[in-house]
Length: 482
Image 1 (cartoon, rainbow, N blue to C red):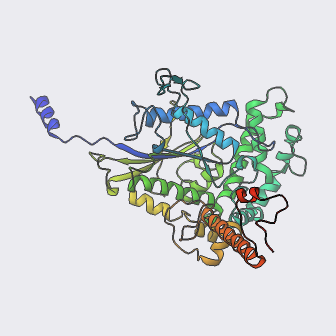
Image 2 (image 1 turned 135 degrees about the vertical axis):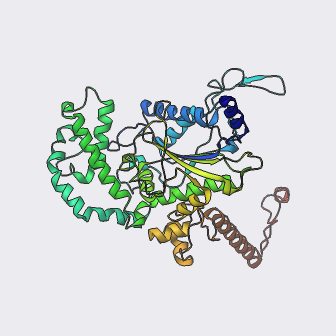
Protein backbone atom coordinates (compact mmCIF):
# COMPACT_ATOMS: atom_id res chain seq x y z
CA UNK A 1 0.00 0.00 0.00
CA UNK A 2 2.85 2.34 0.83
CA UNK A 3 4.53 1.71 -2.52
CA UNK A 4 1.25 2.28 -4.37
CA UNK A 5 0.63 5.53 -2.50
CA UNK A 6 4.19 6.68 -3.27
CA UNK A 7 3.72 5.97 -6.97
CA UNK A 8 0.44 7.87 -7.02
CA UNK A 9 2.10 10.83 -5.28
CA UNK A 10 5.01 10.89 -7.77
CA UNK A 11 2.58 10.72 -10.67
CA UNK A 12 0.86 13.83 -9.37
CA UNK A 13 4.13 15.83 -9.40
CA UNK A 14 4.79 18.04 -12.46
CA UNK A 15 7.44 16.64 -14.79
CA UNK A 16 10.71 18.61 -14.99
CA UNK A 17 11.12 20.35 -18.30
CA UNK A 18 13.88 18.93 -20.46
CA UNK A 19 16.59 21.38 -21.47
CA UNK A 20 16.63 22.56 -25.09
CA UNK A 21 19.65 23.89 -26.95
CA UNK A 22 18.66 26.98 -28.94
CA UNK A 23 22.00 27.91 -30.45
CA UNK A 24 25.71 27.29 -30.32
CA UNK A 25 29.00 29.17 -30.77
CA UNK A 26 32.16 27.09 -31.23
CA UNK A 27 35.69 28.50 -31.23
CA UNK A 28 38.08 25.80 -32.44
CA UNK A 29 41.83 25.50 -32.82
CA UNK A 30 43.33 23.93 -35.94
CA UNK A 31 44.52 20.34 -36.11
CA UNK A 32 48.09 19.05 -36.15
CA UNK A 33 50.34 21.01 -38.51
CA UNK A 34 53.95 21.33 -39.56
CA UNK A 35 56.27 23.51 -37.48
CA UNK A 36 56.09 27.32 -37.43
CA UNK A 37 59.88 27.42 -37.64
CA UNK A 38 59.72 25.92 -41.14
CA UNK A 39 57.06 28.00 -42.95
CA UNK A 40 54.72 27.75 -44.63
CA UNK A 41 52.90 25.68 -42.05
CA UNK A 42 50.48 23.09 -43.43
CA UNK A 43 47.73 20.94 -41.95
CA UNK A 44 48.88 17.32 -41.78
CA UNK A 45 46.82 14.22 -42.50
CA UNK A 46 46.81 13.61 -38.75
CA UNK A 47 45.51 17.16 -38.24
CA UNK A 48 42.79 16.59 -40.84
CA UNK A 49 41.74 13.47 -38.96
CA UNK A 50 41.65 15.41 -35.66
CA UNK A 51 39.30 18.14 -36.89
CA UNK A 52 37.14 15.65 -38.80
CA UNK A 53 36.78 13.56 -35.63
CA UNK A 54 35.82 16.68 -33.69
CA UNK A 55 33.28 17.70 -36.35
CA UNK A 56 31.76 14.22 -36.23
CA UNK A 57 31.33 14.48 -32.44
CA UNK A 58 29.61 17.86 -32.76
CA UNK A 59 27.29 16.35 -35.35
CA UNK A 60 26.41 13.43 -33.06
CA UNK A 61 25.91 15.78 -30.11
CA UNK A 62 24.08 18.74 -31.67
CA UNK A 63 23.00 18.09 -35.30
CA UNK A 64 21.81 14.60 -36.17
CA UNK A 65 18.22 13.51 -35.68
CA UNK A 66 19.32 11.31 -32.76
CA UNK A 67 21.63 13.91 -31.19
CA UNK A 68 21.62 14.04 -27.39
CA UNK A 69 21.48 17.86 -27.35
CA UNK A 70 20.12 18.62 -30.80
CA UNK A 71 19.89 22.32 -31.61
CA UNK A 72 16.20 23.15 -31.90
CA UNK A 73 15.05 23.31 -35.51
CA UNK A 74 18.41 22.63 -37.16
CA UNK A 75 18.50 20.50 -40.32
CA UNK A 76 20.01 17.11 -39.46
CA UNK A 77 21.25 15.85 -42.84
CA UNK A 78 21.12 18.36 -45.69
CA UNK A 79 22.84 21.51 -44.53
CA UNK A 80 20.72 24.65 -44.60
CA UNK A 81 23.29 27.40 -45.05
CA UNK A 82 21.16 30.05 -43.37
CA UNK A 83 21.36 28.07 -40.13
CA UNK A 84 25.14 27.87 -40.09
CA UNK A 85 28.00 30.37 -40.11
CA UNK A 86 31.62 29.22 -40.42
CA UNK A 87 34.68 31.45 -40.50
CA UNK A 88 38.47 31.37 -40.28
CA UNK A 89 41.29 33.84 -40.94
CA UNK A 90 43.08 33.84 -44.30
CA UNK A 91 45.52 31.15 -43.21
CA UNK A 92 45.88 27.81 -44.97
CA UNK A 93 46.09 25.78 -41.74
CA UNK A 94 43.00 27.41 -40.21
CA UNK A 95 40.98 27.41 -43.44
CA UNK A 96 41.82 23.76 -44.12
CA UNK A 97 40.93 22.85 -40.54
CA UNK A 98 37.55 24.53 -40.87
CA UNK A 99 36.80 22.59 -44.07
CA UNK A 100 37.85 19.31 -42.44
CA UNK A 101 35.67 19.99 -39.40
CA UNK A 102 32.63 20.85 -41.56
CA UNK A 103 33.01 17.64 -43.57
CA UNK A 104 32.50 15.74 -40.31
CA UNK A 105 29.69 18.02 -39.15
CA UNK A 106 27.69 17.57 -42.37
CA UNK A 107 29.16 14.53 -44.17
CA UNK A 108 28.35 13.52 -47.79
CA UNK A 109 24.67 12.73 -48.17
CA UNK A 110 25.31 9.39 -49.88
CA UNK A 111 23.41 7.43 -52.49
CA UNK A 112 19.77 8.35 -52.89
CA UNK A 113 20.25 11.95 -51.81
CA UNK A 114 23.11 12.89 -54.13
CA UNK A 115 21.14 13.19 -57.37
CA UNK A 116 19.09 15.88 -59.06
CA UNK A 117 16.75 15.57 -62.06
CA UNK A 118 16.86 18.44 -64.54
CA UNK A 119 13.87 19.71 -66.52
CA UNK A 120 14.89 17.74 -69.59
CA UNK A 121 14.96 14.53 -67.55
CA UNK A 122 18.73 14.30 -67.16
CA UNK A 123 19.75 12.88 -63.78
CA UNK A 124 22.86 14.56 -62.34
CA UNK A 125 24.87 12.87 -59.59
CA UNK A 126 26.81 15.13 -57.22
CA UNK A 127 30.57 14.51 -56.99
CA UNK A 128 32.23 12.81 -54.02
CA UNK A 129 29.13 10.89 -52.95
CA UNK A 130 27.21 14.11 -52.35
CA UNK A 131 29.92 16.03 -50.50
CA UNK A 132 28.23 19.08 -48.97
CA UNK A 133 29.77 22.43 -49.90
CA UNK A 134 29.78 24.81 -46.94
CA UNK A 135 31.37 28.26 -47.43
CA UNK A 136 34.01 29.36 -44.91
CA UNK A 137 33.97 33.12 -44.49
CA UNK A 138 37.25 35.01 -44.17
CA UNK A 139 37.76 36.42 -40.67
CA UNK A 140 39.49 39.77 -41.18
CA UNK A 141 41.86 39.38 -38.23
CA UNK A 142 44.41 36.66 -37.54
CA UNK A 143 45.48 36.14 -41.15
CA UNK A 144 48.64 34.06 -41.66
CA UNK A 145 48.83 33.51 -37.90
CA UNK A 146 50.17 29.96 -38.22
CA UNK A 147 53.22 31.24 -40.10
CA UNK A 148 53.98 33.82 -37.42
CA UNK A 149 56.19 32.82 -34.50
CA UNK A 150 55.19 35.98 -32.58
CA UNK A 151 51.92 35.70 -30.63
CA UNK A 152 50.89 39.27 -31.51
CA UNK A 153 52.19 38.89 -35.07
CA UNK A 154 48.73 38.85 -36.62
CA UNK A 155 46.83 41.06 -34.15
CA UNK A 156 47.74 44.36 -35.83
CA UNK A 157 47.28 46.07 -32.46
CA UNK A 158 50.14 48.40 -31.56
CA UNK A 159 49.15 48.63 -27.91
CA UNK A 160 49.00 44.84 -27.55
CA UNK A 161 52.43 44.47 -29.14
CA UNK A 162 53.91 47.06 -26.79
CA UNK A 163 52.24 45.44 -23.79
CA UNK A 164 53.48 41.97 -24.70
CA UNK A 165 57.00 43.30 -25.23
CA UNK A 166 56.95 44.64 -21.67
CA UNK A 167 57.15 41.07 -20.44
CA UNK A 168 60.71 40.85 -21.78
CA UNK A 169 61.80 43.45 -19.21
CA UNK A 170 60.25 41.81 -16.15
CA UNK A 171 62.20 40.02 -13.39
CA UNK A 172 60.25 36.83 -14.17
CA UNK A 173 61.45 36.83 -17.77
CA UNK A 174 65.05 37.71 -16.93
CA UNK A 175 65.24 35.04 -14.24
CA UNK A 176 63.95 32.35 -16.60
CA UNK A 177 66.14 33.55 -19.47
CA UNK A 178 69.22 33.02 -17.31
CA UNK A 179 68.17 29.93 -15.34
CA UNK A 180 67.12 27.97 -18.46
CA UNK A 181 70.14 28.85 -20.60
CA UNK A 182 71.80 25.47 -20.10
CA UNK A 183 68.54 23.65 -20.87
CA UNK A 184 68.06 25.38 -24.21
CA UNK A 185 71.71 25.12 -25.19
CA UNK A 186 71.45 21.41 -24.50
CA UNK A 187 68.70 21.19 -27.13
CA UNK A 188 70.97 22.47 -29.92
CA UNK A 189 71.94 19.03 -31.27
CA UNK A 190 68.23 18.55 -32.05
CA UNK A 191 67.36 22.04 -33.29
CA UNK A 192 70.60 23.41 -34.78
CA UNK A 193 69.12 23.25 -38.27
CA UNK A 194 66.83 26.13 -37.27
CA UNK A 195 68.27 27.72 -34.12
CA UNK A 196 71.80 28.62 -33.08
CA UNK A 197 73.56 29.34 -29.79
CA UNK A 198 72.22 32.90 -29.80
CA UNK A 199 68.57 32.09 -30.56
CA UNK A 200 68.26 28.88 -28.53
CA UNK A 201 67.00 30.63 -25.40
CA UNK A 202 63.84 31.10 -23.37
CA UNK A 203 63.02 34.10 -25.59
CA UNK A 204 62.01 31.60 -28.30
CA UNK A 205 60.41 29.14 -25.88
CA UNK A 206 57.29 28.53 -27.94
CA UNK A 207 58.85 28.11 -31.38
CA UNK A 208 61.46 25.75 -29.92
CA UNK A 209 58.78 23.67 -28.20
CA UNK A 210 56.68 23.74 -31.36
CA UNK A 211 59.56 22.38 -33.42
CA UNK A 212 60.27 19.63 -30.89
CA UNK A 213 56.59 18.76 -30.54
CA UNK A 214 56.17 18.36 -34.30
CA UNK A 215 59.33 16.24 -34.43
CA UNK A 216 58.05 14.04 -31.60
CA UNK A 217 54.87 13.34 -33.57
CA UNK A 218 56.20 12.95 -37.10
CA UNK A 219 59.96 12.42 -37.31
CA UNK A 220 61.15 8.86 -36.84
CA UNK A 221 64.47 8.38 -38.62
CA UNK A 222 65.65 11.79 -39.86
CA UNK A 223 65.59 13.67 -36.57
CA UNK A 224 69.02 14.75 -35.35
CA UNK A 225 69.93 13.37 -31.92
CA UNK A 226 66.37 12.13 -31.46
CA UNK A 227 67.49 10.10 -28.45
CA UNK A 228 67.82 13.39 -26.55
CA UNK A 229 64.10 14.11 -26.87
CA UNK A 230 62.93 12.28 -23.79
CA UNK A 231 59.40 12.72 -22.38
CA UNK A 232 60.79 14.81 -19.52
CA UNK A 233 62.67 17.09 -21.93
CA UNK A 234 59.57 17.67 -24.05
CA UNK A 235 57.49 18.23 -20.91
CA UNK A 236 59.92 20.88 -19.63
CA UNK A 237 59.95 22.60 -23.02
CA UNK A 238 56.14 22.57 -22.99
CA UNK A 239 55.92 23.98 -19.45
CA UNK A 240 58.28 26.84 -20.31
CA UNK A 241 56.40 27.57 -23.54
CA UNK A 242 53.08 27.65 -21.66
CA UNK A 243 54.46 30.17 -19.17
CA UNK A 244 56.05 32.26 -21.92
CA UNK A 245 52.91 32.46 -24.07
CA UNK A 246 50.56 33.08 -21.13
CA UNK A 247 52.57 36.14 -20.18
CA UNK A 248 52.55 37.40 -23.76
CA UNK A 249 48.80 36.87 -24.13
CA UNK A 250 47.40 38.14 -20.83
CA UNK A 251 48.22 40.47 -17.98
CA UNK A 252 45.54 41.62 -15.53
CA UNK A 253 47.10 45.09 -15.20
CA UNK A 254 47.34 45.58 -18.99
CA UNK A 255 44.02 44.55 -20.61
CA UNK A 256 45.11 45.53 -24.14
CA UNK A 257 47.54 42.60 -24.10
CA UNK A 258 44.51 40.32 -24.37
CA UNK A 259 43.03 42.16 -27.37
CA UNK A 260 42.53 38.89 -29.24
CA UNK A 261 40.36 37.53 -26.45
CA UNK A 262 38.48 40.83 -26.17
CA UNK A 263 37.55 40.89 -29.86
CA UNK A 264 36.61 37.20 -29.71
CA UNK A 265 34.31 37.94 -26.77
CA UNK A 266 32.52 40.60 -28.81
CA UNK A 267 32.13 38.22 -31.77
CA UNK A 268 30.66 35.52 -29.53
CA UNK A 269 28.29 37.99 -27.90
CA UNK A 270 27.17 39.43 -31.23
CA UNK A 271 26.41 35.99 -32.69
CA UNK A 272 24.53 34.68 -29.66
CA UNK A 273 22.65 37.96 -29.24
CA UNK A 274 21.47 37.70 -32.86
CA UNK A 275 20.14 34.20 -32.14
CA UNK A 276 18.30 35.51 -29.06
CA UNK A 277 16.83 38.66 -30.64
CA UNK A 278 16.30 37.63 -34.29
CA UNK A 279 16.13 33.83 -34.23
CA UNK A 280 14.32 33.43 -37.57
CA UNK A 281 16.98 35.24 -39.59
CA UNK A 282 20.16 34.38 -37.65
CA UNK A 283 22.37 31.29 -37.68
CA UNK A 284 21.69 28.68 -35.03
CA UNK A 285 25.28 27.44 -35.17
CA UNK A 286 28.38 29.63 -35.39
CA UNK A 287 31.81 28.06 -35.86
CA UNK A 288 35.06 30.01 -35.89
CA UNK A 289 38.58 28.65 -36.22
CA UNK A 290 41.46 30.59 -34.72
CA UNK A 291 44.90 30.49 -33.14
CA UNK A 292 45.90 29.57 -29.59
CA UNK A 293 46.53 33.21 -28.61
CA UNK A 294 42.79 33.92 -28.70
CA UNK A 295 42.14 30.97 -26.39
CA UNK A 296 44.77 32.06 -23.90
CA UNK A 297 43.77 35.71 -23.73
CA UNK A 298 40.06 34.84 -23.43
CA UNK A 299 40.80 32.41 -20.60
CA UNK A 300 42.53 35.22 -18.71
CA UNK A 301 39.75 37.75 -19.31
CA UNK A 302 37.01 35.28 -18.34
CA UNK A 303 38.67 34.38 -15.03
CA UNK A 304 39.24 30.74 -15.94
CA UNK A 305 42.81 30.31 -14.69
CA UNK A 306 41.79 29.32 -11.10
CA UNK A 307 39.20 26.84 -12.42
CA UNK A 308 41.46 24.24 -14.08
CA UNK A 309 45.08 23.80 -15.15
CA UNK A 310 44.00 23.24 -18.78
CA UNK A 311 43.29 26.96 -19.05
CA UNK A 312 46.93 27.90 -18.50
CA UNK A 313 49.25 28.14 -21.47
CA UNK A 314 48.80 26.86 -25.00
CA UNK A 315 45.64 24.92 -25.90
CA UNK A 316 46.37 21.65 -27.68
CA UNK A 317 45.66 21.07 -31.36
CA UNK A 318 41.92 20.77 -32.17
CA UNK A 319 40.85 22.23 -28.81
CA UNK A 320 37.35 23.70 -28.66
CA UNK A 321 35.42 26.28 -26.65
CA UNK A 322 31.65 25.86 -26.79
CA UNK A 323 28.93 28.33 -25.76
CA UNK A 324 25.47 26.75 -25.55
CA UNK A 325 22.28 28.82 -25.57
CA UNK A 326 19.84 26.75 -23.50
CA UNK A 327 16.34 26.99 -22.09
CA UNK A 328 14.04 24.98 -19.87
CA UNK A 329 10.98 26.67 -21.34
CA UNK A 330 8.16 24.28 -22.19
CA UNK A 331 7.98 25.60 -25.76
CA UNK A 332 10.42 27.06 -28.26
CA UNK A 333 7.61 28.41 -30.46
CA UNK A 334 7.58 31.32 -30.19
CA UNK A 335 11.24 31.68 -29.25
CA UNK A 336 11.69 31.88 -25.47
CA UNK A 337 12.07 35.29 -23.85
CA UNK A 338 15.62 36.30 -22.94
CA UNK A 339 14.92 35.85 -19.22
CA UNK A 340 14.22 32.17 -19.93
CA UNK A 341 17.56 31.64 -21.72
CA UNK A 342 20.90 30.69 -20.20
CA UNK A 343 24.45 30.14 -21.46
CA UNK A 344 26.68 27.19 -20.63
CA UNK A 345 30.41 27.25 -21.35
CA UNK A 346 32.26 24.06 -22.25
CA UNK A 347 35.90 23.43 -23.10
CA UNK A 348 37.95 20.49 -24.26
CA UNK A 349 41.74 20.57 -24.49
CA UNK A 350 42.61 18.56 -27.58
CA UNK A 351 40.55 16.58 -30.07
CA UNK A 352 36.91 16.13 -29.08
CA UNK A 353 35.60 12.59 -29.47
CA UNK A 354 33.10 10.16 -27.98
CA UNK A 355 35.69 9.11 -25.42
CA UNK A 356 36.75 12.66 -24.54
CA UNK A 357 34.06 15.34 -24.72
CA UNK A 358 33.97 19.03 -23.68
CA UNK A 359 33.23 19.61 -20.00
CA UNK A 360 31.24 22.47 -18.47
CA UNK A 361 33.14 25.13 -16.49
CA UNK A 362 31.95 28.26 -14.64
CA UNK A 363 32.78 31.64 -16.19
CA UNK A 364 33.69 34.98 -14.57
CA UNK A 365 34.46 33.50 -11.16
CA UNK A 366 30.84 32.47 -10.60
CA UNK A 367 29.89 29.04 -9.21
CA UNK A 368 27.13 28.14 -11.69
CA UNK A 369 27.94 26.55 -15.06
CA UNK A 370 24.73 27.95 -16.60
CA UNK A 371 24.39 31.73 -16.42
CA UNK A 372 21.21 33.69 -17.17
CA UNK A 373 21.55 35.42 -20.55
CA UNK A 374 21.58 38.89 -19.00
CA UNK A 375 24.41 37.95 -16.60
CA UNK A 376 26.45 36.34 -19.35
CA UNK A 377 25.99 39.31 -21.71
CA UNK A 378 26.83 41.80 -18.97
CA UNK A 379 30.04 40.04 -17.96
CA UNK A 380 31.19 39.57 -21.56
CA UNK A 381 30.47 43.22 -22.36
CA UNK A 382 32.75 44.29 -19.50
CA UNK A 383 35.84 43.36 -21.54
CA UNK A 384 34.56 42.81 -25.10
CA UNK A 385 35.95 45.12 -27.79
CA UNK A 386 33.22 45.31 -30.38
CA UNK A 387 33.67 48.33 -32.64
CA UNK A 388 36.39 49.74 -34.85
CA UNK A 389 36.56 52.99 -32.85
CA UNK A 390 36.89 51.06 -29.60
CA UNK A 391 39.57 48.79 -31.03
CA UNK A 392 41.56 51.72 -32.41
CA UNK A 393 41.34 53.58 -29.08
CA UNK A 394 42.43 50.51 -27.09
CA UNK A 395 45.31 49.70 -29.45
CA UNK A 396 46.43 53.29 -29.97
CA UNK A 397 46.48 52.78 -33.74
CA UNK A 398 46.11 55.97 -35.79
CA UNK A 399 46.80 54.82 -39.36
CA UNK A 400 45.05 52.56 -41.85
CA UNK A 401 41.52 51.70 -40.77
CA UNK A 402 42.09 53.76 -37.61
CA UNK A 403 42.93 57.02 -39.42
CA UNK A 404 39.30 58.20 -39.43
CA UNK A 405 38.68 56.92 -35.92
CA UNK A 406 41.62 58.83 -34.47
CA UNK A 407 40.43 62.12 -35.97
CA UNK A 408 36.67 61.82 -35.77
CA UNK A 409 35.79 59.28 -33.09
CA UNK A 410 36.39 59.53 -29.39
CA UNK A 411 36.62 55.77 -28.93
CA UNK A 412 35.09 56.17 -25.48
CA UNK A 413 31.85 54.37 -26.23
CA UNK A 414 31.17 51.31 -24.11
CA UNK A 415 31.30 47.89 -25.70
CA UNK A 416 27.98 46.91 -27.17
CA UNK A 417 28.90 43.32 -27.92
CA UNK A 418 28.58 43.90 -31.64
CA UNK A 419 31.53 41.69 -32.33
CA UNK A 420 32.55 43.90 -35.22
CA UNK A 421 36.04 43.02 -36.30
CA UNK A 422 38.78 45.68 -36.26
CA UNK A 423 39.02 45.44 -40.03
CA UNK A 424 35.29 46.05 -40.56
CA UNK A 425 33.43 49.29 -41.07
CA UNK A 426 33.24 51.81 -38.24
CA UNK A 427 30.28 51.16 -35.99
CA UNK A 428 29.69 54.76 -34.91
CA UNK A 429 27.84 55.82 -38.03
CA UNK A 430 31.01 56.10 -40.11
CA UNK A 431 31.24 55.22 -43.77
CA UNK A 432 32.42 51.70 -44.56
CA UNK A 433 35.46 51.14 -46.75
CA UNK A 434 33.31 49.67 -49.52
CA UNK A 435 30.89 52.61 -49.57
CA UNK A 436 33.75 55.08 -49.43
CA UNK A 437 35.32 53.40 -52.45
CA UNK A 438 32.12 53.68 -54.47
CA UNK A 439 31.66 57.35 -53.54
CA UNK A 440 35.28 58.09 -54.48
CA UNK A 441 34.88 56.40 -57.84
CA UNK A 442 31.72 58.39 -58.62
CA UNK A 443 33.39 61.68 -57.69
CA UNK A 444 36.35 60.85 -59.95
CA UNK A 445 34.01 60.00 -62.83
CA UNK A 446 32.13 63.26 -62.41
CA UNK A 447 35.36 65.26 -62.53
CA UNK A 448 36.49 63.47 -65.71
CA UNK A 449 33.17 64.12 -67.44
CA UNK A 450 33.27 67.79 -66.42
CA UNK A 451 36.76 68.21 -67.88
CA UNK A 452 35.70 66.53 -71.12
CA UNK A 453 32.74 68.89 -71.36
CA UNK A 454 34.99 71.94 -70.94
CA UNK A 455 37.36 70.67 -73.66
CA UNK A 456 34.48 70.20 -76.08
CA UNK A 457 32.98 73.59 -75.27
CA UNK A 458 36.14 75.69 -75.34
CA UNK A 459 37.73 73.84 -78.24
CA UNK A 460 34.66 74.01 -80.46
CA UNK A 461 34.42 70.26 -80.66
CA UNK A 462 31.33 68.12 -80.87
CA UNK A 463 30.49 64.43 -80.75
CA UNK A 464 29.55 62.53 -83.93
CA UNK A 465 28.17 59.02 -84.33
CA UNK A 466 30.31 56.33 -85.99
CA UNK A 467 27.76 55.95 -88.81
CA UNK A 468 27.99 59.62 -89.85
CA UNK A 469 31.76 59.52 -89.63
CA UNK A 470 31.92 56.41 -91.80
CA UNK A 471 29.60 58.01 -94.39
CA UNK A 472 31.85 61.03 -94.85
CA UNK A 473 34.23 61.11 -97.87
CA UNK A 474 37.83 60.28 -97.21
CA UNK A 475 39.74 63.28 -96.06
CA UNK A 476 36.52 65.14 -95.19
CA UNK A 477 36.54 67.29 -92.08
CA UNK A 478 33.00 66.25 -91.11
CA UNK A 479 32.65 65.99 -87.37
CA UNK A 480 35.69 68.16 -86.68
CA UNK A 481 35.23 71.84 -87.29
CA UNK A 482 37.59 74.69 -86.73
